[in-house]
Image 1: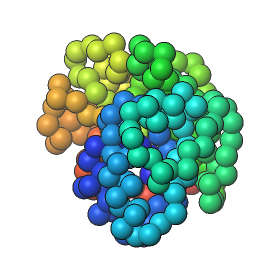
Image 2: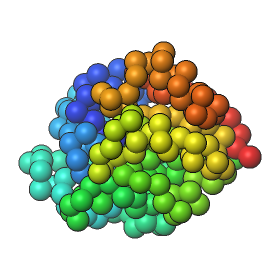
Image 3: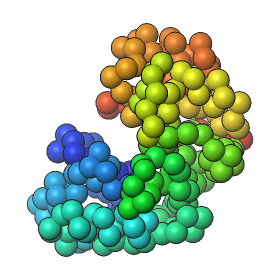
Image 4: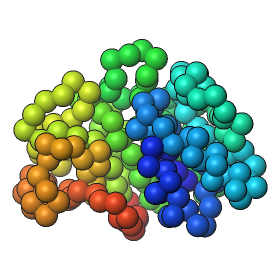
Length: 214
């Protein structure tokens, strides 16, 4: 399962030799959906049928208005809280604060299978009680870490929020959406670990093993 189809999909496709069965879109900004044309070229080279792409109805409408050719996508609109089975996974979405535009609602995704749970929340402006409930009991939370010691209305300032996140009922916290204000990787790993021993930064090519959740 592919979460977001980024503008760097031509690089990401190297990790998809085994194929992909579905895509989940968090929102309609280009960093989340800008690779949809490249996904089409990749699928057509493999003579693949249209790929199921799950998102909010508003996101689907925005994506359709942005790209001219999307015949390789079989869009499936999901409402927040609605469950859908995709292979062994059960997926659910929660609307989280991110963009100011009403036409850009943003989802965090919860994926559950075989006793383990992953929550992916790459674009979050602020932490909410709803998000805390949504991630509770997860083996892993992948969370927005765009800002460090600076504020931006659409993203978390992660050094300020990590101590609070560390109180949440989640076994491991992985930082993504890492912005230019953050320290270089080795220092970020140390600094994040000081703020929360269960937290650390992601990096390109990272592979993670989802152990059983509590």
